Length: 427
Ligand code: LLP
Image 1: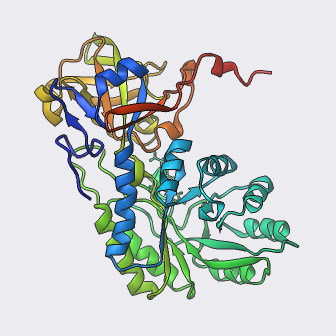
Image 2 (image 1 turned 120 degrees about the vertical axis):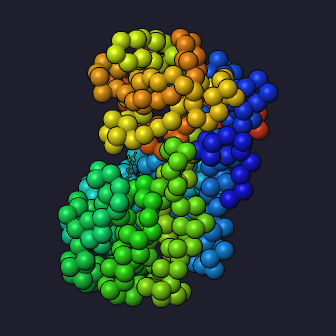
């Protein structure tokens, strides 16, 4: 994928340090964005998302795979504007609940481009998906088969489904986001799959197109994918294989994930070798499409010294739960001192913390920043995936807006929550 950036590659494509020494995202000065839209704010470089979508598609074409679908795992960034962008790019969309289904339709996806996932969908969610005419439903277990059999009885059109198989391969990642191991809440085991396949094939109103797997998230190695494809290859010969998401990204400059091109080439070659040619291949990237395209801007509210130096900003675990849930490591920079600090960050060792009422609200422990002062704008890159998605109102903090930036223009696509929104559901 072509890149024009002059900063650390973990920033959105096209980011740079401008003549004033300020971070520039999508052609917009980060300090001006913070002034105009307030903080905290999620800033998304629209071109970055489009470039990554195109890179996935181009990679399949370059690998000689003609029948494929790149499906955006919308859980990574379930905002209508993000869904609309990927719909425009021709991608499909993975929805894992009635809510994501609702958003994807609102975002302009054709129902045929949707794949419904989940390990615990009730009748209502299935009914909504059937009524909408979703392209595929991933069946997660025998209770799903019972439920679907009941709901599709008497329908004129057959519903296409995939069977989610847990291949018995652990993704090499944080245990909370590894899903392929045998002891998982997702899918049916390889041993149970033949019975599930036989049952699905016996239901006239369902059409079993193929198998689905998703071994985990933020993976840096291709080997588990290969092992998992090998495991499901023994279950029969199907026209469609969906190998899930999971491609890892660089959160810090020293991390070396697979490039999209290399990852897709490896998957295509493993599929060709283990599943045979002429298959329809689907993948479901979430993080790899949206993580690096987004950053969070915060304002420093307080700087305190005791045993450590504590730099507190106006957000925290309400806008980024990943450090607290997964011990995820991020970088940060003072947004108008990037020239002096370079991508290394500076020489003042601090704990970058949030505004929430618990000690666990640490965004980055021991980070080197360039002498942060009250009022400074601090940028935390790589918050595009699972930031907005997992945002919450802890301590009554309104959730940040999502701002799209492109060619020097910026606009709000999700507004900041207001204090009145906090009691909008009161009855
Ligand atoms: N397909 C399925 C069926 C999934 O369950 C997931 C993610 C994906 C695709 C997309 O995976 P990705 O390409 O984004 O790795 N909240 C966690 C991540 C949970 C991922 C859940 N499933 C985090 O912030 O790291």
